[in-house]
Length: 71
Image (cartoon, rainbow, N blue to C red; front, side, top):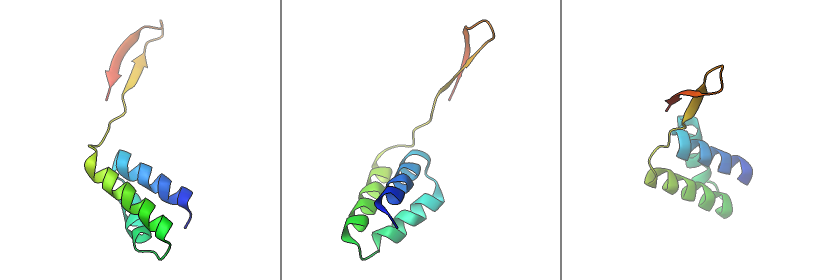
């Protein structure tokens, strides 16, 4: 398990509440590598503090004007 992987799992957990990412964070939090464990715990903590964010997308029409915003 690498710190990059744990960080990306943390992003997926914090942003989208993806269950697999949360499971990986829990597994990493229990590993013997203290740095990975601390990173996983910090990402789990951050995910529990911040509300789930939704991405907003603007849909444009063919003439270049914005026609709607989807969230």
